[in-house]
Length: 337
Image 1 (spheres, rainbow, N blue to C red):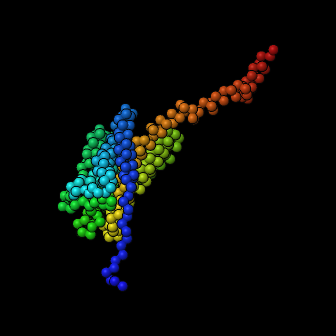
Image 2: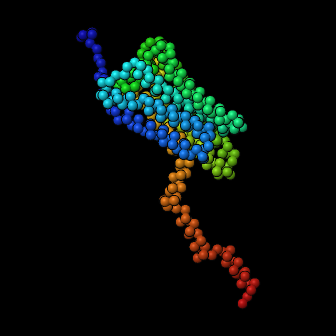
């Protein structure tokens, strides 16, 4: 048997351009819609801190997709004949990493905002609240930009990943510097994720405790229930989208995962899909939207409240209550004919 004989698995076929096109269309459309709804409803929310964070998140997500995916579509449109030059690959890597880390930091900032608002309301309602929020938004962008360009600052290059349509930090090479940076990025992302989970869990516990203390306040219970569902949805969806990429990078850093193929492609697509889900969670599926559709269905007659109230007077007229009969009988006894 020939000792030089090697067994190699065939490379995967070139993927379809449909997923990338859908990410581009829905990503830009969703975030633009989110910004429009934010601006149109500014009189009701008055640009409170939470909504300022939503605005920063929509700008980060929508801008990241708009600045990267048209270039990706060129790669697909040329049937993978166009290869990114290294400067363009570094640019793509920066945009992708900035979008992912920026989104993660904004979700963390929003979770911290709810944590302080519910657990420390006196500190939250201080006079410097708006200034603190603006400083946090700028800080998020600066820190995300630093993390996204750190590998370029230390002299490393970005890596083009299968199918050559996206670039990222080189976490597939065996070099020590690449592995250290990959480990740093994955652990940083995991720490941000753990912080988000801890903050939201604390908020849910506090809301449950307050609900038990105020059992007779129906409005408070409804509001608390909405907050719990809202935060639970944030944690589950965000964790589902970002975890596969962090696990993949961490696996490459410690040597348990190797290669450059569909696994890495699906991980980055799933993490970017978080930028599409974000506006629909924070804006479209908010409490005011549900109340709007409820009012619309009531107006259109799909949920009729008048049917139950219209039957009550007629039944009272046709079937007088026992109190009315007793009152009439007492009057007849007092005034006999």
